[in-house]
Length: 406
Ligand code: AMP
Image (cartoon, rainbow, N blue to C red):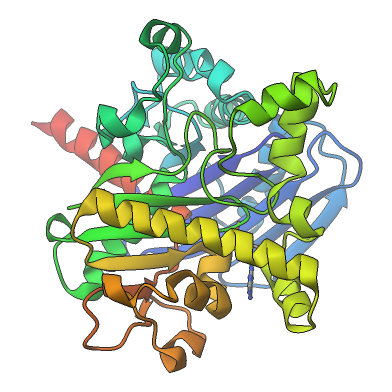
């Protein structure tokens, strides 16, 4: 009989985040992070459920060293990768293109396809691949499962997924809207239905994932019908450092008139725009502190952020026709009462109202912040991408195990 533990790995270009979960009860056995891989001053932080957190500074030259350092820490807690309790390793993979609509057990063909998608996810897919290959080398006998950020959005109709540009050119270069944060949108839309005491199939939800990266999605009966990120995670909402929607002609203008290169504009729009570009801060706590102190630049940045958010709420209301709930999630969505209040202010005509008292209460779990008699529920629903990756991984491994038995 296979074990009940799943190790979830989120491998970035210079960091690896990991969680070891026990799927019998959803308990987190250990959580950790290796940062600054391949840079000076690498750092590991490891927190077992039954013990003190440990931190470690030293040299971690590559992902192989990072995963070995993680494995050594898990070993110290008696949770080593060699344990028969470990059922599978679940990997976050950012871009699955159109091919991967479901979590997928990794084999050579899957690796090759993730590699083929590197041109549309140059920052993420290479690091995700390295994480998978390194984990395979550590436990070649164990199923490695890829869970794709794009998968939840593959149900979008062509009318939402296609840009209105020449079809042949778009198809030749796989230019279309893929969407990201899908694991979070899937989890939060389902949890919102649970909060309402209804089946996901019966509920239409607008999910607002507002973290440092931010995206909105329109979910009809559990299936995504539109989302704000596109070919890359640059499109859509105003984010911590990304511009979100702009007129594409801004780019030509900056090239022709501003004399900037494509790479410079890429950096501008991804790293020096959004909240940080508008006011020099990307942390909503600091922005609110400045707004409350009367800082005009922070005030304008906040207003631009809210204006865009409100436009997407309105747009997705129209896309869905009937909305049962609006769910706020991720760092800003879960923690910033002023953002939630401002995003919904003035939308009473759409049935959207926030109760000031409920909105101000801080809490850990999913909760309603709209009045009991509201036409549309407004909710705060904490996201849990690791749990979703673990759950999808475990379900897939158990499924294939059962199929093998029959
Ligand atoms: P995430 O990407 O989901 O981890 O979200 C990170 C962002 O959440 C930070 O950049 C902050 O802007 C925001 N954030 C975190 N905690 C708070 C808080 N207590 N109040 C307002 N914003 C917060």
